[in-house]
Image 1: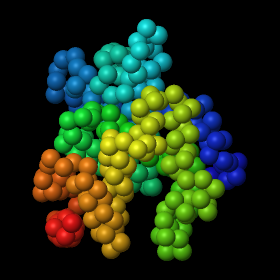
Image 2 (image 1 turned 45 degrees about the horizontal axis):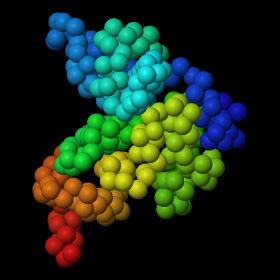
Image 3 (image 1 turned 135 degrees about the vertical axis):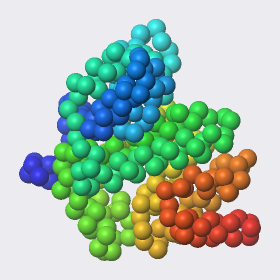
Length: 286
């Protein structure tokens, strides 16, 4: 690790990241080639949407580029990937993607936080459709970008998140955020929020990332928490998932628990059934 990073504050990292031409995941180009091969024609924004929603870094680049180029006469901020792609168009999107440096999504450490971001965004897209009063695509974007601080540290200063993870897994501290504070003096979520401000992300996305007291912010937060607990194989994660699902059931009241649990298809069947049974038992006692 670059020695200068060892004593940097969250603000210093945020300024540094703002000055970088951030890479995208190498898989994004491969997915574009596959889409073109299958489609054999110009790709529409809806065709490109799945490519962007697999890559938090590309999502960030697309949103920032759309915000920078939009007309000053437009009053509404660009809060969804589809709206951003409509502003960019097929040609500019391809230029952005093909001109970007890439990083392998299979890089140790980075791979896990990318998986977490993807799971969180899928959960957000599925669960938030159960509410008629919010836009699922906005929640999906916020859930996908919720771990950008972690992702960028794994790319530029991997020793920091590695040491924080080792400290947490040692059992010496009860929470990952506490381990992060002990290693570098700030939490990775704090870094995410500082970066989002400096990058000029839409106000709504910033509010959702901060966890403001609204239904869509709570859904964003519980999706991120659930994704983290899904990837945690410890026994304590089972109880954490039960609490997550109790909150989801409270937020999405017009969808049955059975349907809500279908979104956890990435959990091993035995573990998912255990979490479901424990959740249902607690719901019945209320």
